[in-house]
Image 1 (tube, one colour):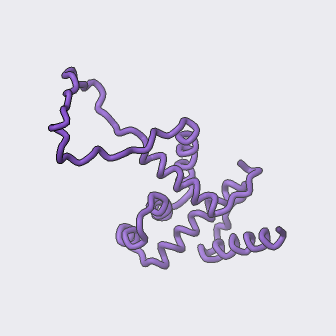
Image 2 (image 1 turned 90 degrees about the vertical axis):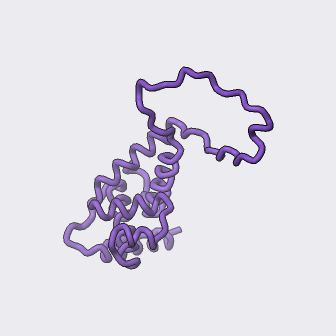
Image 3 (image 1 turned 120 degrees about the vertical axis):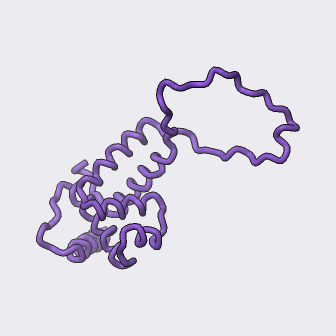
Length: 153
């Protein structure tokens, strides 16, 4: 992983993919309980007026599950609040709901989300985040690095 140049946007994509894979996993069943009754044969008259069954995405591939497990381990590098914000945002939660759940303003929640993505990107790139620096300083440092890389291209 160290040879890849990780950016916060790549990290965000991996978190979004992990959340998507998590939604597509089959539900948990209690072991030992099963049904011996045969399935019912339904006729057309039974189906009239019923809502169609919701369509589901196919189950995730083994590679996607492996990437999801790896991505979930990245959350341990963050503070509990930062990890919660990053995960809620990856699942597609709206900022208003995130702010209500975490108890922060929109600006503070967004800054913690960006900080979490930057910390994960730095650790994946083989660097340690600066301990005695503010969140804003680390975010600005990552943005400056991104601007330098784009100038070189």
